Amino acid sequence: MRVANDHFHLQALFPLPPNPLFDLGEEPGMGVVFYILWFNSPMLPSMDTILRNQCRLDPKRPIVVAVSGGPDSLCLMDLLRQAGYPIIVAHFNHKLRENSDMEATAVENMAARLGIPSLVESADVRAFAEEKKLSIEDAARTLRYRFLFAQARERGAQAVAVGHTADDQVETILMHFLRGAGMTGLKGMAYRTVFSVFDVEIPLVRPLLDVWREETVVYCAGQGLRPHYDPSNDSLNFLRNRIRHLLIPNLETYNPKFREAVWRTGQSLQADHEILTQSVDAAWARAVVNESDGLITFDASTLTEFPLGLTRYLFRRAMERIQPLADISYALLDRVTAFLQNGKTGGSLPLIGGIRLLREGNQVFVAGENAVLPFEAWPQLPADADSLLLSLPSRVDLPGGWRFSCESWNIPALAREQMQDNEDPFQVWLDADTLQGDLTLRVRREGDRFEPLGLDGHSQKLSDFFTNEKLAQRARDRWPLLCAGDKIAWIPGYQLAHPFRLTKASRRILYFTLVSPTKKKAE
Image 1 (tube, rainbow, N blue to C red):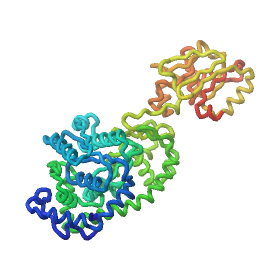
Image 2: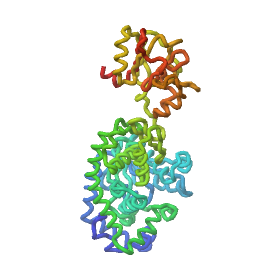
Image 3: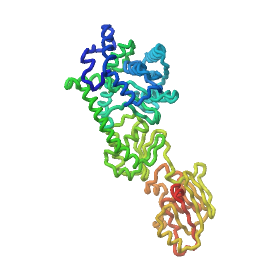
Image 4: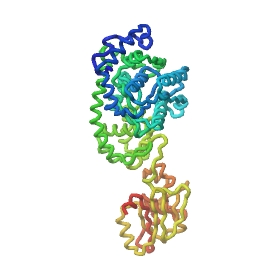
């Protein structure tokens, strides 16, 4: 098989007709001649090398092969079959064209004739696109890959194989270039990729990235395979098709080998990207506080230590982990870095595919559409209790591992000394004689006001206090407030109220503390 960087192409020996998918039939011997030449080519062993080395496939383990019915996927299917790999044909019917059901049936029948197990599934792509606010192309890709990886898991397959060719690689690189991309976009697609959003172990492999589209057409003709023709490939409504039918032919008037030049550029950048990846890996290990399903948390202060370009790559990786098929442009990454440089906490920035960026204190979240942001960093009252009555002494366990406790102190001088030296906003000493009414921990109420220490009796709205302190909006509703009767005596983590402070006249002292789960572990 001829590879993309081989200057000695089949096309150079026997130029193909303008539309080989149909014109080959008018010259019956042509496909056979091509096939004999191709099959006996000394380049055939290179496909075995690609399958084993670049794609890292085991000849004894099954592979789910995505087969649309076009020449690329049929060529891939047959090459894997001829090489002795156990394969399962999988076809996803997007229901976007009138003849899509007929195409699905044709793939099933073809697989049956060859004795290959097949799987077919369909879905309403347009409805999914509207629901998720995605383009038709992104919605189709997402549903198709969900189906393919689900089948791979269910059947114990080692990989999902797709028929992306060298032409697809060139078109992809040009699409990224036009939209503004760095090295990650300009290097194009890889032979083997793990999309963790679909499966953390099963890879997507692309064995045909060295093979040109016309070569797959010739292969199918020689093997007697009959690809179907997708009329949407001619539609200029899609950017990829405009690149294929308008841009590339125009650029080939400047350089007849333009496609090969772009393909070689991608190959070169693939190697360079491996070096960059090592730097990103090291930065990722330092900056990522936590990674869970659909949510990645960065330490904001660590991010400021990195060069701007490295920060962009970190957030590109974060978005790709959550939405691997998202089209991440330079402009999008520029918005991310501008948001971070703003330094504003409590803000949120919508990104792409339902992903959003949030900054809360010293943490930056990249969150998927259904991600649940953690509350462990903050004390919160239980969801089923708006108020908890306190006794002396007492200890209350709160969600996320936080613990509240209170006790009496009998040495006022020691309490005042400790209070003056205290730098922990989650502990406080109060004058017991000023605390009138029941002691409670409660959530905020409409109209709450607070008298911060040092304002000498002047009060402010609790909502204004939270805003000034930049407390994350989602943490405010269930933040525990220590109250004496109806008055707020202490906002743990922030400030005590002026009327309840210790003075030289204070004789009875109450000590309150709220301990975080990290401090509890240290104890």
